[in-house]
Length: 539
Image (cartoon, rainbow, N blue to C red; front, side, top):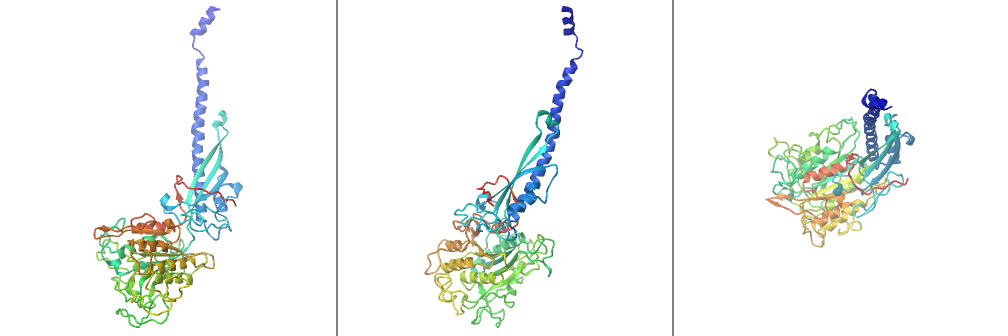
């Protein structure tokens, strides 16, 4: 017996069986890790792609009058067959859940140039639910959507260890597409003499020259805006007669030019006007503003029927959507196309700043809103963008004339019946903007006003005013101010002017227009790290 035990102890035959058995467990485990995890990573990428597509589609439909439910749009792109998915269905990916929520992400907090949250929630068609109301979001609209999808996938070798399936999760956040698409945009630019006194060395993030006047800085900002918009439908030539307009842009200037063509373009003595025609472009006086080099057009007092409109709605400022500026377009030429080209050393193209009249906003605001109303198309969002550097201080002589306005003191306080007044000019501007924002079109939409204060002072305005220029520019803007009010300084003569409080904190004029243009763009994905107060739809 002792002999048998000693023999078994000394001999080694058959021990590899124990090693093979033990190693098989390890080999199967490694196979489970490599094959199952590899398949899981592939499935995770598919799920994330599904979720990105669903969020982007939901953002593009938020809001859109043709969309009955953003959630339905998300479901169609989610890959969840149980929810009626039409796209992104993968047979190896069992999507088991799709959750949708909305938020108002304020631009100044997220720094992603998001569209405004100011549009009221479209609860009647369930386009999106009511988001939390706050000082920055008084109407309770939403501008972002979050989609979370879950899916299960089967395992292969991992079943040996009791793992028959794995659960995957993907999250995607997208911006909304803005208040509406497409847009009717009326630019209102200050061309008073102060916009050409000196040069602003700090208006651009990157520039080829330091000799740009404030007017040229403003025009190059508009060029930035025009590159972000979509003038016509994808795949069409925007310069052709049969294109489908998308974002149409017009331009007005103040002080106004003569509305009567009798005297020609060489005189500054405008005839006395007798009727109101300030929303029809005048071909006699407009060309000097478009020509290069530009020449000063004759201007006229604010109550002498000035012609504010330089160009009506244009949709050829790009040749095709995204192709860059069309330098042959009148709108592009009017805002100084080529002034930031290195070979242009004179910078003498685009709108001049003739001077001769003081700053007065209300007339241009009324003319802009009148044009927007006369050319409104249902479910196209009307937008006014007003840029000024100054103080409303026109004299009684500069406010001369007797042409009756389309509005009256009953609509815009501070007026003298149906004439604009030479007193309380800042308050008239705010009242005019309130009137414009209160005009409700047949489709229920109203004009949104972007106010861009470019070096406005913190004191001033005319007799009868309690407002400052900064407060005036703030009062012109739509709410919330965090979306519609911008204030940037001028850096002239080695001195940088102050910035109005309460405005979006952007210090370069071109970046203001980039932010506005980005907010008007279509939906786009945002980092998943963006935080906000998310609302789950109840419909």
